[in-house]
Image (tube, rainbow, N blue to C red; front, top):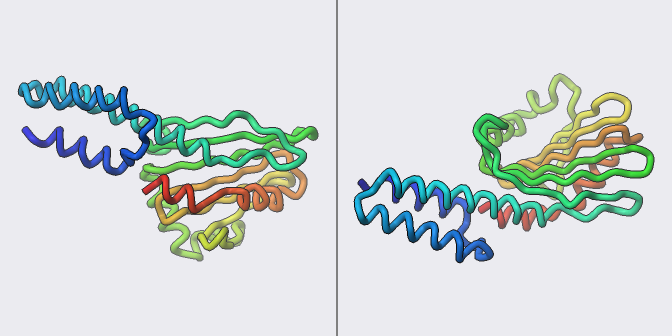
Length: 201
């Protein structure tokens, strides 16, 4: 009978209950779930708690979105958005992304992904330089102390991926951008990886 409550406790700890902006609404949802649990209505309690977890994930995604950098000189950026991914997309998880464009049609996207099973696969890839180099197609480098790899995609495209503390994927991709490798490096350097790491704990 304690299993639903234990499951919820583990999930809420991983999501970080410090997201106090959602405290009132989510606290009410949790309270309702606990009340139902105490009444022995396990299925209903689980439904309420799962809904609260979904709300927490969305709040975490929105918090990640605030860490996406402003547009550098010569670029414009959209508002950026955070979302909780279903299991059918990238294996599930929490993500935030922002798109940047210049007046020449160039496009750069920054994406942050956490709580996804795909992160473990990327960690294994970065842990093996032979595989990470992709037969010589990828360049290995460090971004603010974190292992990363950079690959050219056509004449005007590039993608950089790095892992922060083996928990958070940061991906920067450029399309229709001359010197695309330089562009993704420039945008990646704008990221505050320390803050991203703190939020993902």
